[in-house]
Length: 155
Image (cartoon, rainbow, N blue to C red):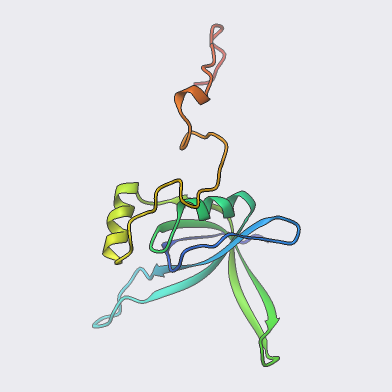
């Protein structure tokens, strides 16, 4: 059996990175997703999905996303049960994210933050998690050109 879910929506609050007692990064956040239809004479409905991300995915979400950011989250839906404060059994469904992606450009995201009445993004140095160089954060000096003298590279 197999479960795969993909949602595209906007974060309803800023994600906050936490650590398990074993030092594993985890974040949970809520994503608002508009339904694809509007009832006749009514307003478009919105569903709210709880999402949990672990390890590098959690760190990525906390580094690049904030309240109002558009996000694509992909993973499997899982349910878990717990007892509430009054001792009642409760069940919650969560998307356990295996992958998250951007769905809008940085310029669009900035404009949308203003539409939601949110302050502009803080400078990258504020609260940033240091990460190794990558194509999104590195410079040309961080990478090495590969010589293809014999023409065996597939691209």
